[in-house]
Amino acid sequence: MQKLGILKKINLRQFWPHEANDFTKWLSNLINTQKKTLSCAIYIRNCKELFYFLETQKDEIENIIKDNILEWLELPNNKASLIKINTQFNLDDEINWSKYFKWMIEKYQIMTDTFIKYLSKFNQNFDDNNY
Image 1 (tube, rainbow, N blue to C red):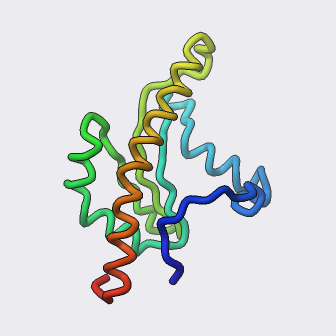
Image 2 (image 1 turned 180 degrees about the vertical axis):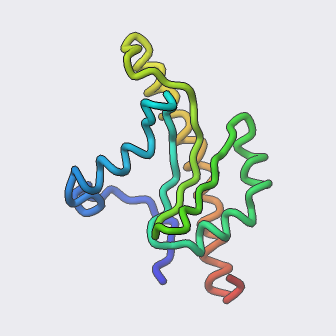
Image 3 (image 1 turned 45 degrees about the vertical axis):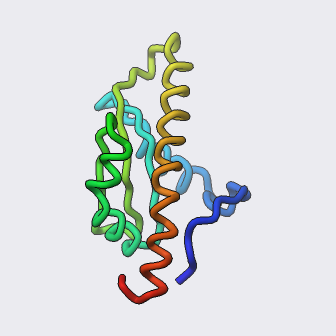
């Protein structure tokens, strides 16, 4: 299994080779016009073990993230899992779009700062055959 934890710039076409099938599907998980919610998500692709490990750390993670309610989605019939934060959002409210973008940037920073710490713990546990 490949170790996780290194953030690097990638060609988006490597991650989303076909926009309609890949990027649009990912984006639809973040913007829900029916429920009027906007989300920031940690998308865990092809590694249910990482999701399960993070879930065992759920109380500690949620205590760090504090004022944000995390939604933990295993997605059992899918190879991916999601952990996300939601807020109310109105796509027609163009005046507040900059506020929504600012919210997304702040939440992604909080989530990145928090989850990156757990990636090294996961790698250590995996190396020690504890997981």
